[in-house]
Amino acid sequence: MAAVKYSLDEFISDMTSLVEALPNQAKLFGKGSSHLQRLIQNPDAIPEEYRMPTGSGPRANHGSYLLHQAPSGLSITAVVWGPGDFALPHDHGTWGMIGVVGNSLMETRYRRMDDRSQDDFALLEEDRVGEVRPGEVTLLIPNIDEIHQMNNLTDKPTPEIHVYGLDLRGWDRRQYNPETGKISHFSTTKWDNC
Ligand SMILES: [Fe+2]
Image 1 (cartoon, rainbow, N blue to C red):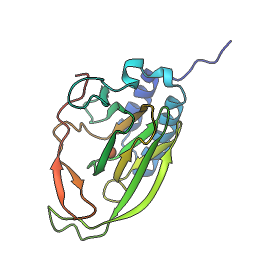
Image 2: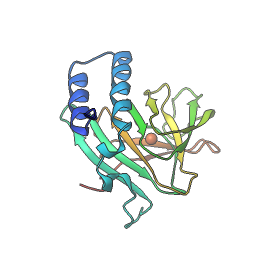
Image 3: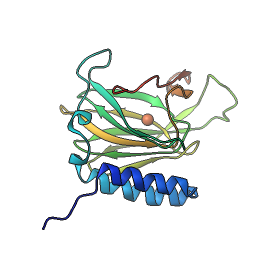
Image 4: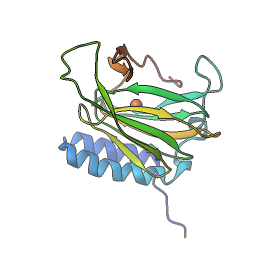
């Protein structure tokens, strides 16, 4: 008999229990990333329509779909980067975990070098660049290691699962220009499926 694969519902349940237990950050990321790694080993656990770009609208080559939003703030989304799609350097203002479900994505991480005293300026230094592959999980650690740029340099869509500690809709976030230092504020207004 084939082993039963880890489902999206089981992942949501495990993450809900984990977050409700109010773990410290090490435990949250340790247990949380092992749950996420299990989930992304089985791409079929994610509905097929959430593994492709929307194909229409202002950002047709991208997709962001809400899979679960808990009252605690726990937010689980599927994000798809079409060929050539990208996001400029930005932060999240909450803890997060990103797991690549298929294909790959180039991620550039930045360190913030200034004293954070200005609302519209940040001195960024490139920390590392790497290709993130299926089955791999990266962490977003608030104020420490969370500013990143994403680029899909391939000719196929890259689906990911993003897990955040709060509902990003309406949450004030920052986008950075590493050349000029300028900070622009932005927020996610809605997901593509709700
Ligand atoms: Fe991000």
